[in-house]
Amino acid sequence: MTETTGTRTPHTEIRALTDRAEITDLFDRYLRSLDDVHADGGRALDAAWAAAFFTEEATTATPAGQVAGRSAVLANVSAAMRLFARTVHFGSNYVIEVDGDRATLRGNQLSTHVLADGGELFVSGGRTDNELVRTPAGWRLHRADLHIAWTQGTRPALASVLPQP
Image 1 (tube, one colour):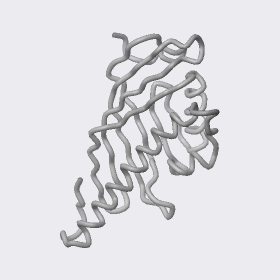
Image 2: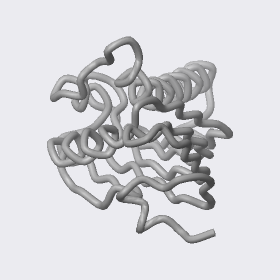
Image 3: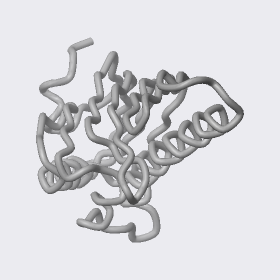
Image 4: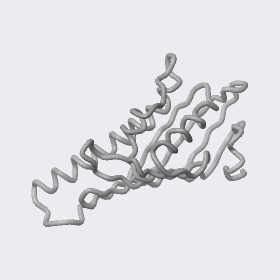
């Protein structure tokens, strides 16, 4: 974590720690929300969900495709999540750099999926590269990219873009 603007004071150090905690919380809640779609009848991914995590101009690049704009991100994530009966997404090793009202988060992601069509298991691991912006509502993802390093198991229909083992 770095704060690249201004002199280091107790106030700026506390602000940097608070920013890092808020960014970590946002990203962990985002990953958890993907799993909550399938838990106990699930929670719909809707405009309120998208606004809680993404800026209006957000972009994503994932195995499900590259899209731009919050509504396109919502449609893309919703379509991808319909491929799975259950999921568990785990993020770790976050490296967060804050520069004023902008930040980056790089980390690892391990995702376990049970396919909706047949119940087969599909696991992927990779890294996530994100840019965030501080908004009046708090930190939001402005760019969220997932780079798959490896997979195991039965690939869902969209997995043709994933690297081959």
